[in-house]
Length: 346
Image (cartoon, rainbow, N blue to C red; front, side, top):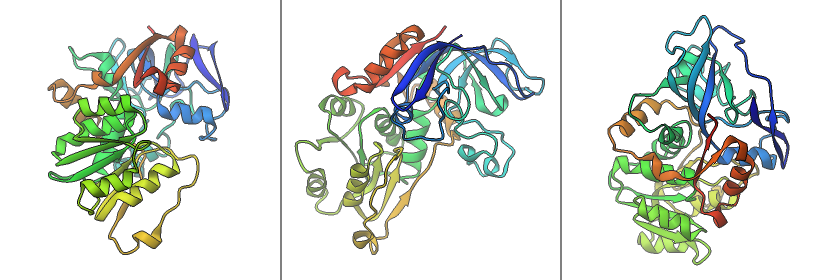
């Protein structure tokens, strides 16, 4: 089968690889229909995720068709169309019983990281009963690819961890796909303002179209000064970091109001300074999280009820044969105006 393989920092290739096989009774083999590229895949290629070893098939998102199931699988059957969760969970270990599926003792974020992933024609999914979701009839399967990772990530790591409430003032630093997914799901809670901060005018225009009340280009103005002017010197109730670099995390420290929350989403490959000399007396909460995908069933319901439209995040389409071009387009988003790319594998 064809698969996109990580060859070490800065290196990737489309290769022929053996078909995956059932290893454990709880496995399923999925024929991939649609997959995508995540910012985390770019972090891997930059060398920010040393636990991902060369030779790994990348990708942790997608929808597909069940081709084989192990003898212990009960919730899905051959022929079912399924949404693949980016997080694999056994549902039984101590962490899973706490709802922390990302820390599952035999799962977590392993697809495209510690085991072969979804940027291929087929993929093996461990713990299939608790790591796959049947797709209701009539839903757009391209839209549902966004529910594999970015929408639950934005919702859980940004909105829920950020403790957003009606009437709050929220700033989201980073208007890439994760930041925009956070913007879409933050609106569930009716904040008074959602301010998007980025360096890309195109992405800020998209954010405005998707519901941002204001946008700030941090190349044009000092964003912290602008935020303070917009909030009468108070700052924001929730500052959400959706980039993964030190400067954006430290910006969140500068703009959060007393009693507020900084919710980190970004994947950080280098240190960021924590300015306790400024924050020690301000009743600030700082949260970190890897998505657990506990909200995937809720998000499926919101899409089915047409309360959430993930198609708004998709800008480009490729075939698996052209996945190298897809990476180039996604990696040069400022030039190509790419948000999420859909890769058709079948």
